[in-house]
Length: 384
Image 1 (cartoon, rainbow, N blue to C red):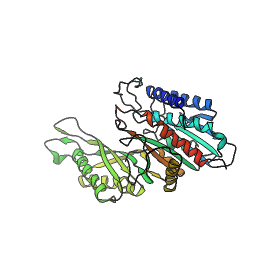
Image 2: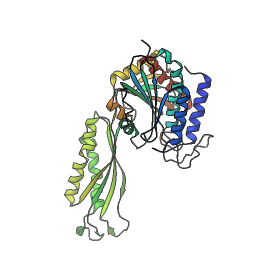
Image 3: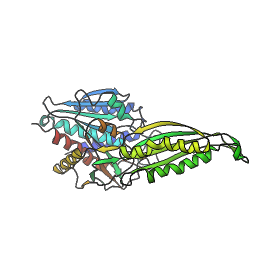
Image 4: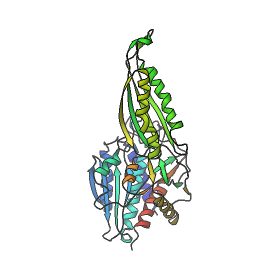
């Protein structure tokens, strides 16, 4: 499907992107490289969408479906510990999730798709998205209209997965990645002397009680047949040994696999917090900092992706999973709330895990991941 030269060029580009990571909504040089490459291939390119997003379009001029492929471009504020030649040249920034590989993958596929454009019908959109890492870039791109004019009928994307066999292509129909809700809980008590707790309202004690009660939501309110987890990721209060502080601040992260599990967890956070605080005479403030919906693949499109992968022999190892491969969140879920589609996975091999200072995208999976996009274009936009 790809020549040795194409794979070598895609690998070289991936290394360049890895050397020059950019944070969410700051992907200016990455976007510039992407846009230049797509224009050179012959796509109609729009830049500056949702700040730094890029949209490339191939209108075949023949009636047919409208489909979209998506790649993410942003990096993370992590200091890279790798020592290979293409390590980050920007201290404190790193492509620790493989978005450099995702971008290189879609550019590799874009070349092969353009070469075979005479055999295609319909309309293809290639979405290069900023700010997947905590910036809800997908939501911003949708609001900017990338799914409209013409309206996208189905959308596809992927993520590399460390710990799964190198080059294994797999799909989880239905719930496939967790939703992410992050809250800041501020508990207002009454400060006092550590020797006289009865004259104070101790926010540390109240906060500790809340931590325990929140786990009851997972154990006794969420169905055991659904997935979800609550993590209190930060707890800040006080700075003196003989003083009961007046307030405490907690950061609560909630993961859920579907709307019903989200309602059982995030939906009851305020109720439980109020109950705990009322019981001890404290007050509270609840701030919803960030939200990504659970990612659920359309079952029919998941089946079709697997069928196309087999038809075009994209990988020697094609699997349908019956379990959620991760509770990690992915803002591709915003696209799937608007149009049907499928978010597939490609095994990265036994590499360091995502968001780890030693992680690196496995270049050997480029033919599988890129090949899946090409196969989808050929299978869904075949000239009629």
